[in-house]
Length: 103
Image (tube, rainbow, N blue to C red; front, side, top):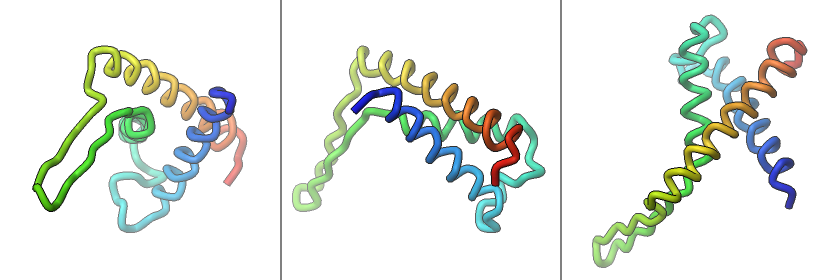
């Protein structure tokens, strides 16, 4: 699948989730009245969560947790993917939700 389409789809889903969280009473950290800084921080966290390439496997019998994907190159790839996700989310939010009036 085309990576641009995948990127925009992931970003659109994250923007939709963030918009839903603004109206959720159980998530008081984010409301329509939250400061722009709080909204940007939550957007950055969401972008990081969608970009992370770390995997884990837990064996309950042995009590062993194996974490993989933590290499220098994966950290660089993560950083680039995080920037892409954050920029895509901001473009979608400002272009469609905030300035476009879409609800």
